[in-house]
Length: 128
Image 1 (tube, rainbow, N blue to C red):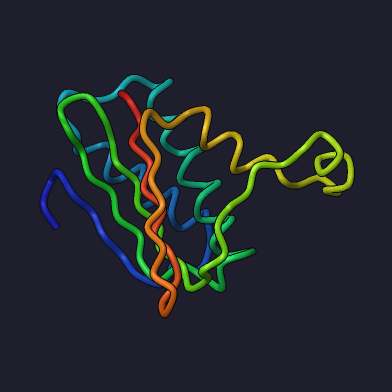
Image 2 (image 1 turned 90 degrees about the vertical axis):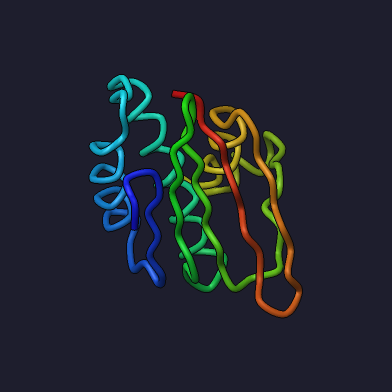
């Protein structure tokens, strides 16, 4: 690990991912604003939670820092893509279903690489 990247495999919780992310963001120079830190933590939490709930676990988790952004990558074992939900879906979601729309709104750039044999990698670029 260098100061501008972090990586771990097989996360067991979004709490663990947030801790790794907080430690990583503390090494970024110049330090991100508290609002930027909270935004990155929210995106990490949502992506990891989705991978744990719907993607058969987290296979790989990476963070990278650029001069004006942080990149978050979460790989899981499911080839099923996240989907946008309708208002009816939200009404039937029983307290869930908001994570993907939140990530879509907060990320500057969002990509999904599908690997049919191993799952997918979701990459979110978040401005600092």
